[in-house]
Image 1 (tube, rainbow, N blue to C red):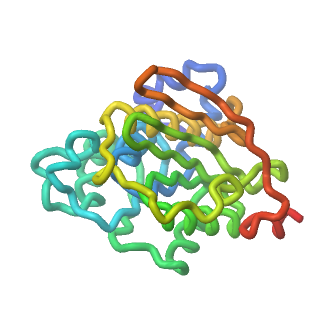
Image 2 (image 1 turned 90 degrees about the vertical axis):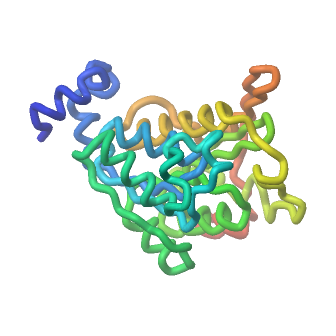
Length: 251
């Protein structure tokens, strides 16, 4: 049940007929893993905590650097030098002390990543490198857990939802294969702050939809964001039957 305090805290959300009491209860009972607490993970964590997702698992092995503060809005100047997980824990507890926060402060290897994914209902990939995205995708396919994947660099962003519970859904590997050896990071190519905020906010929205059970998730669709021209484009994407990650599972 929801307490009187929770009914008041989430009242504006509960007013939505798509959410209502039942949806808020599903959020309270929901569990989400956020991989990366940088530019994307910051708004994801803030919005999911504020919305009342009952259990947030926070995974990041990095520490807060001064250069992060231009876009990683969950951290502040006093956080510099702290682990990103500890900085996020402080901020999220202040926003909503009624939720449970579980910390993963070290890099997740194959076994610990598999266990972390298995322990939640939805996974949000907010990392900034291809190898992590591939590992998270493989773990989600193996565990049958939906994955909300976002990316942003320079003035361009991408977002999609991969749901192995749906036979028609592609996985991350279906779209991107083995990636590129010349992949750039934000520290090399730059990124504008509000763009990662936008992509992260959309990731949080997709998570709320999946957990509360409303709306149409971004499955089988890739959203492309052009921040320079403020343009959004959507591409239909299909599962690759020959995919080395998900093809045999669905085959």
